[in-house]
Every structure is written in C-alpha cells, then in structure tokens.
Length: 64
Image (cartoon, rainbow, N blue to C red):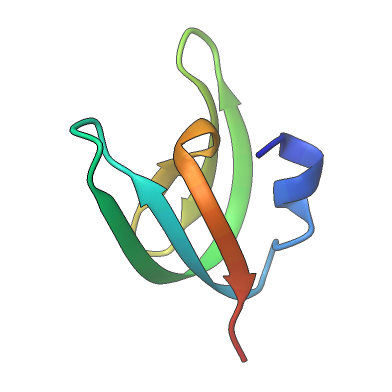
C-alpha cells in the first residue's frame, strides 16, 4: 500500500489485515488518525490503538 492510497482512510474506522515480522496474519479494527513517513523505516498507518507499516498491510476496508 502506498501513502496516497492510505490517506483515503483518514478519520475512518477500518479493519486492517497485516503480517507481523514472523509472517503471521493479524486483523485489527482501528480508527485511522494519520499516515506518516519515518526516515529509514518507511510509511505507517497511525491508528488509535496501533501503528501498522504500510508495506505489511495485506488488506484494509472501511467499517461502519
């Protein structure tokens, strides 16, 4: 996922599925508060409960 693609979810509640560093899948529901770029680490989706690196996201969808 790229930054412009992630910015469309700002301020929304989403369900995010991503892989952790061990390759296991996790699904979390969160409210997206920001999308940021951290030098030497990359881009991340900043949520109210957790930050997720954009390159690890496998699927994301808005939740009502």
